Length: 158
Image 1 (spheres, one colour):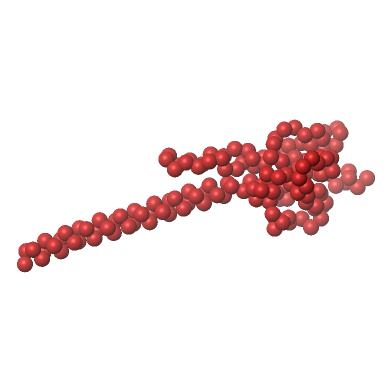
Image 2 (image 1 turned 135 degrees about the vertical axis):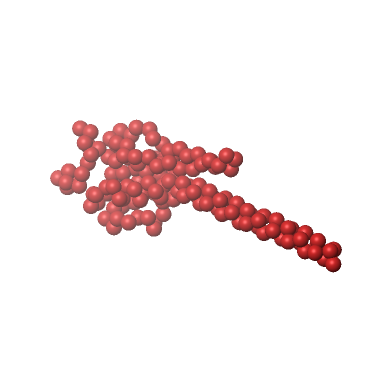
């Protein structure tokens, strides 16, 4: 009879170890999933740049050139919210002056344009210690007039 009681105690201890191990595994899986979700949210800077541009700028009409990197990193037709804006994804050499806004992968100064803002994107993630490294990926420029002021709808209509 003592042998049966000892077996139950050992079984109970093993079951408890198994159960806590299972809980720890689930908690670890949730942490890794949350970390991955946080990293993937930073993986689409082009889409974020286009959404921010449309939210900040109040122009009725505009033309936007979407650079290759912005197009590959999140810009899609579903994000084109302004009906009177024109969106271009022309590759290769472009004439900057044909556009009101530029979504570019480089932050170099552009003649006739002012940098409005940049959007950071994922560079890498590491698990030990947990860290997400980002850097500026997409730069948004707005065309300015010759005197350096921003071009508005009223100025374009004259």
